[in-house]
Image (cartoon, rainbow over all chains, first blue to last red; front, top):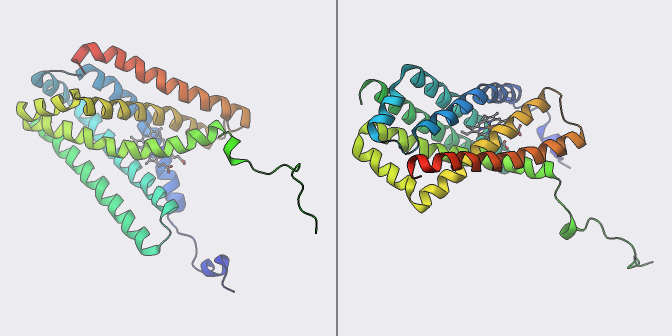
Length: 124
Length: 132
Ligand code: HEM
């Protein structure tokens, strides 16, 4: 009989487990102050006219903090969503495809946000 | 063969089973985490619009003021605040603190209640600011 144990024996661990666990905690710790700052900042420009919002977001320290927020969020999101995929998508191929989709999604959102932030800082 | 007597309790009775609050907060953490990922689409749109000019910016602001826009922003803001509070709770657990059943139950209720109260308070402050 081929039990689950027998099937996985010899395959070894997934290898990325500890690394992902730690990266998830590290990004979570970084996100606590960043998200608190983000909530505070957004509250300052709710419904603001265009030029007011633009000047506000152009401020150098806000540009840096926004980049950090996006970066930490997308790293954290990528690991988090991969974990969700790991739990619900048992099929090997589908699992790999779903994780690839997760990675592309996070990269796309992250890079789009970064591009916009830099454009706000230097062009707009 | 003896048939099980009807007086014997059937277990578990799924219909009357009350979800422990720790289970509720756990599933909500996952749910809000996924929701936040989608919520970043809103942030991306806002930033891109702001970088493009007044026209696109006003269009996005108008969407935020619409019924669907407000509904999405309300959900996003609650998701951020819940996930933030419950994430901090998770980090304390990872550090070996607060994982006893009574403590975890109590902090679960605190996080749930606080996330709703803080979200409503922030909207109460923000509402008159931008007609949002
Ligand atoms: C505000 C600061 C944040 C903190 C303190 C935080 C904390 C955490 C922690 C500790 C976990 C692991 C939970 C577990 O092991 O079950 C987690 C999972 C997750 N987080 Fe965050 N997080 C934060 C912000 C965010 C943001 C901004 C996003 C989205 C962009 C996000 C998306 C997720 C997702 C998708 C998961 C996976 C959920 C799961 O596996 O059930 N988090 N978060």
